[in-house]
Image (cartoon, rainbow, N blue to C red; front, side):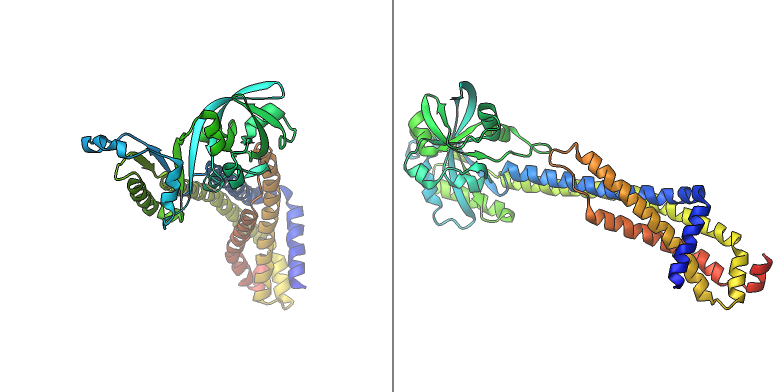
Amino acid sequence: MQIKESVRTSLEEIRAHKLRSMLTLSGVILGTVSLVVVLSLLGGIRAGVEKGINDLGYDGVLYVSGKRPVDRLQQSKAHFSQGLREEDRAAFKNAVETSAHAPVAEGEGIVAANGLMRKASVFGVTPEYEYVRNRSTSMGRFVSERDQQGVRPVCVLGWELKEKLFGKKDAVGEQITLSGRRLEVIGVVHQFDMNFVNDDDMLRETRGIYVPLSTYETIYGRNSVSYMVVKAAQFERAVEAEDETKSIMTRAHNGIRDVKVTNVGKEILEEREKIDVLLRNWMIVFFSIAGVSLVIGGVGIFSVLKISIGERLYEIGLRKSMGASDGEIFVQFLIESITLSTMGAAIGGGLGVLLVLAIGSNFPGGLLVSVPGIILAGSFAISIGLMAGLYPSLVASRMEPVEALRG
């Protein structure tokens, strides 16, 4: 009952001094709004960057490409190697540090459908490419082993190319022409998130077309492998996978070092760590700014509570003379302080949610309100109110009834 009465009294004080109360709560409100908005924004940016990096498809990936031997001895024996070929996949049969291997042939061609023609990048791929480069489909399916073995006239379109040729219409089952060869569309690769992360490969793929490697070779010629993408069994062991890949390729090419292994996965891992550090630093900076606002709000609550005690000396003296204990007076004013900070946190949290929803309209995927941000901001604001009210409540509880009544 005492808690309910204390809350009622604090609300009466707020209503009686509206301007003073709003000025007092402004620091708590601004601090809460800042924390909710900042944590939601950073969460949205982190999610967008994470989605973009995943869509890059470079996690744990090694690129194996052909190169000319550098020393004279290697050059004189270069004819012992047939260069990078699809058959090199068999050399990875007993590999430990790698999990999948996909040869890729890359070129360009003219794609025609619905009376429209577009120049597009053409990728001859095997089924493993879907896993190695994280290329799931939003419609239909990706290239299968049956397509590869049967040299089937099928293709998978990049999202942007599909939009240009077919618009919003479902392209699966439709016919297109690639460099004079009719192909059936069996799938469309999902739309990449390129708002925070993108590169030339992503642009070429989203505007390109995938066909089985065997089909690609019937259109453009045999042994057309441009490079091979290899997936490390564990992202954290990309260096070991790189060493193993170099060793395997050297043996497969009869000791001729005519391939170059680029550890893209290691570079992506380093970039992820840099992004984590950057976002963590941003969070510290913005959290500090919001924290200062909340501390200022706490100072305001402290000051207002001191003023309120000075204005209510007669009430304190009367209650004590009627038998109210020090603890009851202490709890009354402490609850008033917490009520003030809770109101500020509630108003600030509501404004923060509305602001996040308004900002979220500028994000293609929307912006989620940070629930941990709301909880953290509310908890911090209430804690500030609790600490700000401790000393004034203690002063009020230790007053002598006669002195309070005389004051």
